[in-house]
Image 1 (cartoon, rainbow, N blue to C red):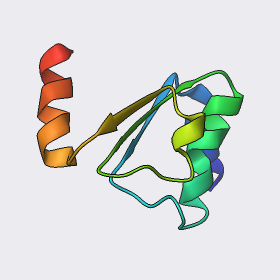
Image 2: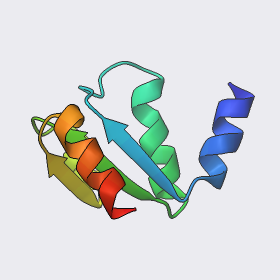
Image 3: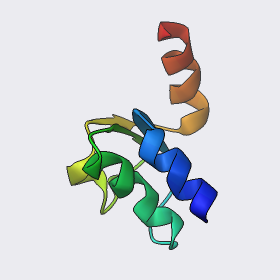
Image 4: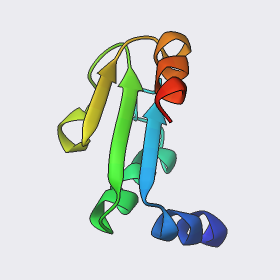
Length: 73
């Protein structure tokens, strides 16, 4: 877990893709990134408890939305 938190502390962006964000400890990982000044991008067909904290919420299926995001990079 130390390695996970080390990586989170260095992240500029965290993408949360297709999850209910209820399973711990993974559900708290995006908040670590946010608290350290990183940006959060959520891709999901519905809002989650994390949605109010994200910088960008892309509403849709990951299989559709991610290729569109990739084409913009």
